[in-house]
View 1 (cartoon, helix red, strand yellow):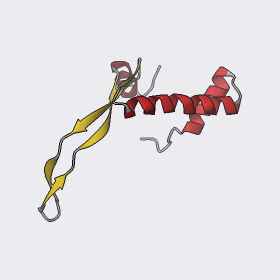
View 2 (cartoon, helix red, strand yellow; view 1 turned 90 degrees about the vertical axis):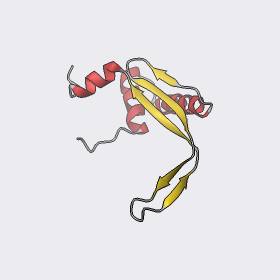
View 3 (cartoon, one colour; view 1 turned 180 degrees about the vertical axis):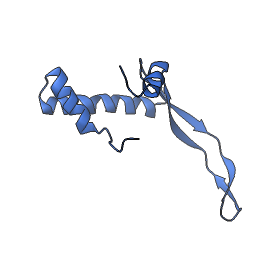
View 4 (cartoon, helix red, strand yellow; view 1 turned 45 degrees about the vertical axis):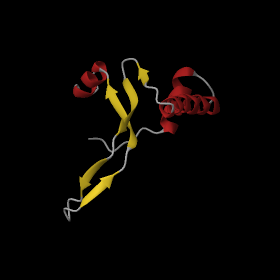
Length: 100
């Protein structure tokens, strides 16, 4: 596994190189896309990106968990969690090691 992490700066640099916008406009574009995605997820909508995958929000119910060290029962509060389901194309691409 690679230790490299793709960052917002990397994305905006890619937009700068491939689209030809200024660096400032590229950064604003990336930020705008991420904000639209985040806002939709906060509203409980799913975000589907063709050939990539689907982001969604799921509500998890309250339950009783157990501290693995002590065995003591602990209440786990209800919460919303972010989920990601990759598309079949993305799964195949990752499995092939990004070979084209």
